[in-house]
Length: 319
Image (cartoon, rainbow, N blue to C red):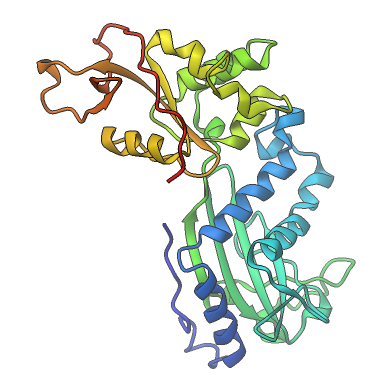
């Protein structure tokens, strides 16, 4: 999922830092693949956009004050996700080391306050638009900061050389859990949001995102209702409505994941779904991956396959 930075990639410029090494080891022991980081950052964007109540899904739709609040939410969500202790002077205490947390939409452009001088900083960058994120550690010293007086709060940023040499990356240019609405065409977005009814919007969402992971945050944004996950289920939800069109919606459940794996589809994780149109297996599908449901073997439908009512999925069961 991610690329892990070398601990002392900047050793020719900066001497070894035992506290930095301790913090790095602690974080990577808890999150070796970056999944905790990525999930916390995804949660931050979803909280800021508040799609369930606003229908927003683009960073540019946020107000200036909301964008300013992003750094605070990143700090809070990372602390909750990792269980970091409060620092006495900085945001966190990690393995007994004071660490400040800074977020920026521009990679490496963190604004460092005067009180962080001498301390470690966890610099985080994430972009929902391109679906990538990075996180690294650096020691705040005069040598790594710009010589300008800074803004009215006295905050300064890293020099160009420090951005290149002084940051010890934990994860660099790693994939952010996708907001699929940012990847759809204007035509698809217009069609999805055309109806005044949330249930109909969710139906259209799953018609137009087949074979791709859809997160619960996206469903909330499209449904804009308190009980948005109910809009996916059978008994009046999208699973029932799309079944005559041959479409099934697989969820996070163990037996649904088995079906996704058998068909070569992305496997939905917690809070995720993936839709697909199915067709009964025939000799024309000789090389296609297949799965047995309701006593019939099914494959992912081709465009040329006629529409056949989809099978009922097995009752949800966790692994």
